[in-house]
Amino acid sequence: MSERPFSEVLKKLELHGWLLQRVWPPYRVFIHPDHDLPLMIPVHDRMVNEAYVEKIKKLFGEE
Image (cartoon, rainbow, N blue to C red; front, side):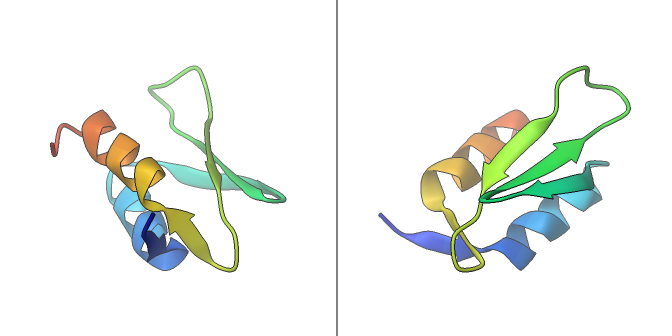
């Protein structure tokens, strides 16, 4: 399956108000003031699996 650079995913999340709270290898943990639960994205070699990119798009209604 294809992958996307973490920098691209980070930019998209920050544009929607998510903040990187912590790095818990291999996860990046994001929080948002309007959401109770954190969002955890696994990152390997600075890349994010396309399946997680699709989930993020769905979360933001971009699908």
